[in-house]
Length: 140
Image (tube, rainbow, N blue to C red; front, side, top):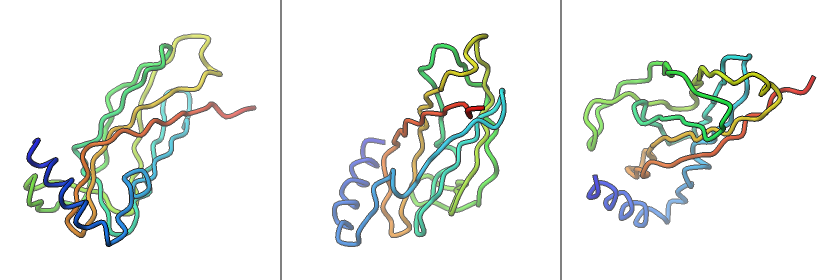
């Protein structure tokens, strides 16, 4: 894996002239409460980029919340030169995270650590990265 990371860094440097987006720009993430048991995380994926389905992981440091098991939607199957046969997402993906919260935390925001990994179609893959998302309850 270290060799793959170094290859990614080398290719990213070599491809710099092609205006490569930073991961946070190529894979814009935002989250919102769907209801009192589910959070929706939406990734808007820039044209020419994709995310790997099996590289998502979600956690929280918020004491009053715990995340349940996420069921990811199916992606498009692709043969990848580094990872073999994989599922990927292009354009956008919606992921629903089940959660529980302690009583009395109904008005408290939750901080999500959303880990993912993706590539640019020009052959540049990014190392895994984390986006920190703050989800605030809708005000009544």
